[in-house]
Image 1 (cartoon, rainbow, N blue to C red):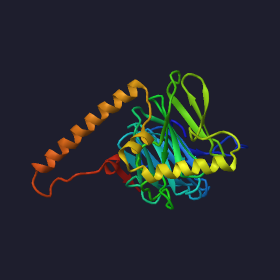
Image 2 (spheres, one colour; image 1 turned 90 degrees about the horizontal axis):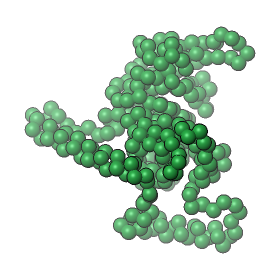
Image 3 (cartoon, rainbow, N blue to C red; image 1 turned 90 degrees about the vertical axis):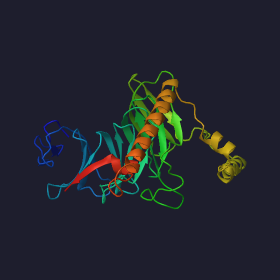
Image 4 (tube, rainbow, N blue to C red; image 1 turned 180 degrees about the vertical axis):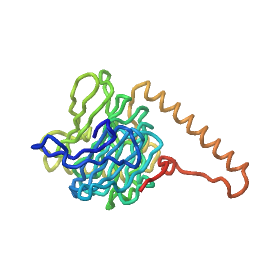
Length: 290
């Protein structure tokens, strides 16, 4: 990735690129992120400043497909267990998951941040990913329903973070990553610190006895059984967030309600069939380019 509007393929033992992708669908903007597919080593994806996400085949030195989002994407990571899926962190405060076979619409939209998403990292299991944001928080999102795949999200993928991490001194988060055992998360922030977090905040560190394991499984089963009750649901989903994050979230909800009401008025007072409601996923993608 470089600022000369090109993607270069290098050999560590050579001083010149092996291959160069110059014609990025007519775009002259800087390429900021490049990632190889973990299963197909001849396939790579990139993010650029023109709000684009592109796919390339290194065997033919050709560009395959590109999608233009409404705002710029800062990061891109492939799912290690389902390599046709990837996640991007966007400047519109959201993270999106895409199926590389169908780039005209994201498969998932993950909300909650009140600042640009600067980093995304998948867990080794491919069932969830963590995001780091300009709003000084870290959020974990589940993308797979029970017995399903990341491409077919369900009841366990609501687009809302299952957990939120923050500290008083932690500043804007620019990089996050899971450890290979899926038990910890590493984060790097603007205050020049690297922090280590538990992937499950309530999980005990160390060896568990058989009695402790049975007790934890029983408690988890109880929560899943009664999570539909308002009191249990409120307790299980309640998270403390910084005051400014709470304030910005409330302002974002007011703005969303205004946009929804305005769109409803436009549809209501237009000629029948000329205007219709569009969901948020459809609005995220502006166009696709072959």
